Image (cartoon, rainbow, N blue to C red; front, top):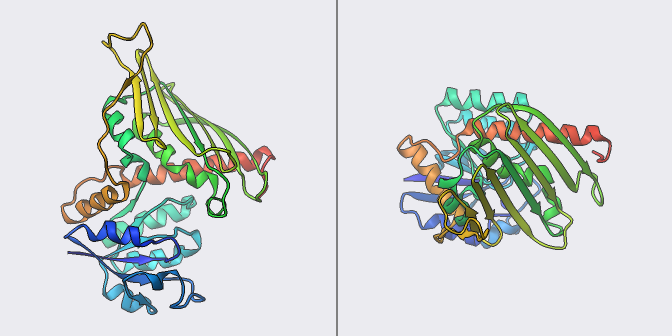
Length: 311
């Protein structure tokens, strides 16, 4: 039985509790909030789990920590948790700097524990259906458009794009050659729109555009290669493509891939459990995750350097 405690409470809904409770081999034991100003009447009080006020007691009851609200301000606490031999699962990735990344990996290795990021896009049914056909693409094009809400403004655009960076790094077997990026701050102090181009040594190119000021909610990635075209619609959970040997190639009629219903968070938690219990390699290695975080930092630095976005 893997006992999981949740660090942070604001975004951890009853739906997430229900998803994790479906696993017989995993047990949620409670919450701990690093924010000392929160009290028992905050959002966690509506969930059927205890809220710990002591970090020591929280650690005594847990084997692994689910980081619900990734925040660079928690970094010292994360190091403490690793030193206490706690596995860490980040629901979302954040832009740790190079020094922080190195220290996290070093501490986890010394403690013999796992770090894993959710990267929920990799468990989207459309991507899972198309993934077997995606191999060494020559061009990748991603669009992530988010409608403006109070919640969307809490997460920087570059953090919203990290899953897409991970996917590109996972399917392109090459090191990065050059990064171009620009962005614009429209409403917020941090960039609201980012456009980037990543060139790989093998000639592959990855372009992406992310915006948190859009009239529509839209997330899709296209993969291009000689005789191959695959489009993954993450929002609509549909995948279509043109592949070698297809009879309808000349009429340019796209084939729709068959998708199977799945729960992204449930799949990620199962992956995390298997990595710990059976030492199975995660779907996305942690080094790829941190490489994507490093690339995100490069893009953000380029955006700030462009002079169009203020920090």
